[in-house]
Length: 289
Image (cartoon, rainbow, N blue to C red; front, side, top):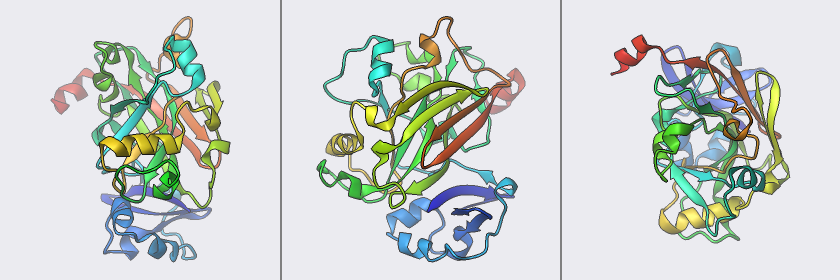
């Protein structure tokens, strides 16, 4: 199944994405108000029963939200493809490099990613996200994939100068609306082996990144085992697995996203996460403050 979180008018919901539109599961399964609630309460079987029902909305009639709008945790993995290690000059790390994102730094598919006033160095990072479906602590590599609900596309948009203020990446990864998550989650029964898929990034229609998921330095089972050692993973948690080579920061000259651009992240078997880019205005920044 493809499952998306969305807003229809002022009402937030979630549902099954079909060729004819979205089946509003939030309205039909009132005991489970969000996709995270479905995962937490082990209700995926109830959600699957809705697959044959008539779509409530055309995809174009709703605003897509981040696939999990309210995760307990978002773990992001740095320099986790060999090509990105090579272009950045980092040695292969002995353990995954982890930083965190906050839920309010994300937008859904089709929503603007915002280049903040404080920087012109807004970089794209095409990634594949893992959505956790079952709780666990100290999960073994052998059982790790049984804890996965599904996979989605992710753009870990980075404000590079703020990322490099210190050795800690967090400031450069958490400006408002700089990350994108979606357009939906594809359940694991449709992608039994995510390592056979391919990821690509396009900026204004030009391909700037491409790699097989199998090129991950630390694969999905390894990341789940590692993260669950220091923190219990719970349903709705997200692990963003890293980007491949070709980021804008290491190009000559550097290639930064700016207002008017359109960026696409495509993972085969999942779909395309497409977002416009806008420049933050001083007036909107003042209103937010």
